[in-house]
Image (cartoon, rainbow, N blue to C red; front, top):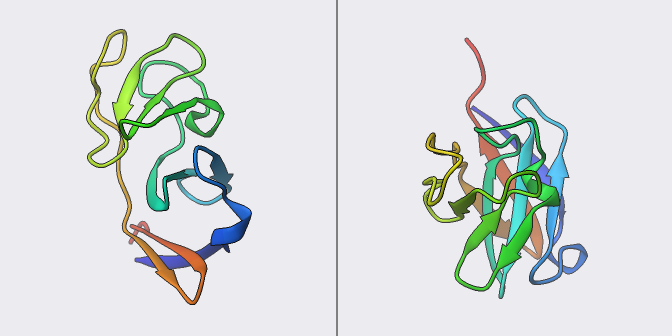
Length: 105
């Protein structure tokens, strides 16, 4: 497992997302102060989920073909996507956002 710093909470306003270059790439979202982290690449096409449309119902819509995913679980909620996105543990400590990803052995 690898834990890395994303940014300060103040740098990620509500309704916004940030792509983090890691292995794998991670999209980090702020929905009304709740922080979520998902695999950044849509499971349907080669689109960055950080460029998607963050909704108040804790979903994100892919900017390429409008597939929707649950930010809490990564579940694919609408076609054309049917494969869920990976989710990653998030911690906010002293106003800083951290994400933990599984690393290859």
